[in-house]
Picture 1 (cartoon, rainbow, N blue to C red):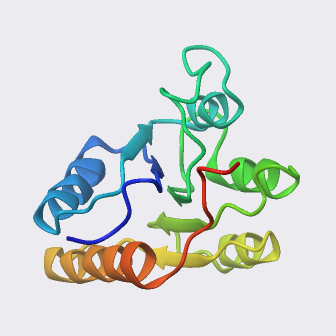
Picture 2: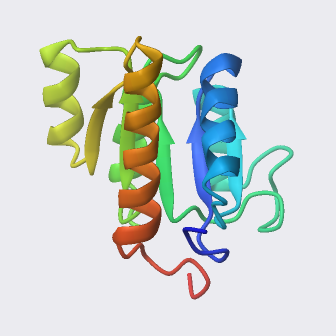
Length: 151
C-alpha cells in the first residue's frame, strides 16, 4: 500500500481510456489516497472553487496534488495552471502535468508557472506502465505533500 488517505489526488483528464489505465494501476498498487476526477477545465475550476455541484468539502476536498492533462475541452490545462498559481489559496498545491504534448512552448510555460513536474504520456503500453508506477511511487509514497486537513 502507498499513499495517505488524508491526501486527495485530483486527476483532470478528459480521456476515459487514460483515466481507466491510471485507475487500474492505482488499484494494483493499493493506493490509499482518495482519487477525484474532473473531465474538463471548467469542471476542475468548479471543483477547486466549490462551485456548481461541488459546493462542499465532501464532494470537492482540497487536493494534495493535481495530475493534469494540458489538452482539455473548454478551459485547457494551461489556463488552469495559470489560475491556480495566481491564487493565494491554491498555489501551494503541486501540479504534475501528464500530457501527450512535447511542444517546447508548453513545457516552458508550465515551468514558468512552477509546475512540479512535466511528464509525457508514452504511447507504448510498457512505458506507460513504468511511467504511472513511477508517478505513484514518487508522488504518493516518497514526496511529502502539503497537509490538506488543516487548510
